[in-house]
Length: 240
Image (cartoon, rainbow, N blue to C red; front, side, top):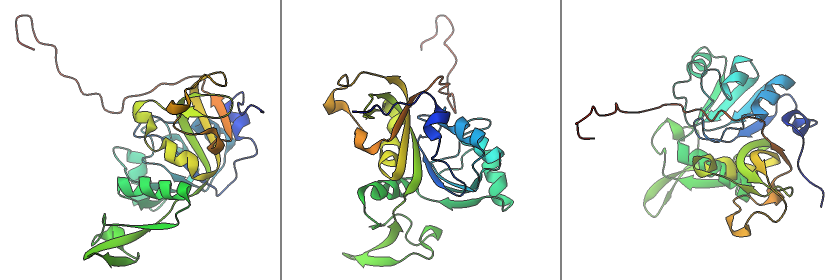
């Protein structure tokens, strides 16, 4: 079996990127972001991108860098958050935005990987979310029809991989990444560690290698915390 492991992000993306493509980018907030592949996409200069991701990074980090570089034409997301650039570009009409309820976004991606072109959900019925979409009644309740999401490329972040592309995620990084890995023409995974073939317990594999085309071992991970919430330490003699 030929190894799917590439030496770095630039080589893994070679021959894959093109202007106007649709890219799924995994992660939830700043957890589970493909921190090495995103800068390589920026360096490539690929533009007019449609990016499907829960959010769009944070100031100076992650997908924000592609926004700031003018490479993203449209975002399909569920959360703008505190990304001021995201908000500014949208309000100025410089960025297209398709905003989804978070569960709907996840299910649209899952449906894309499962080969289900459309499904019905109660979420969004009677709101702007349902505008222009078919609404039908089932068992006395109204449901809005949502379409699947597919992409030309999925970039995902996992914890470990083997040379066959089998992936294991860790904790919050498992959000969106596994579904996206199944819903693209080409999936490239970056991981913290590449282990030998057979080292991963088959019962613990989250994404089978059949969905993964290329793998890189990331050179560095910041793993930023978007909002750090702490409380002061109690003074001596005070109760915690």
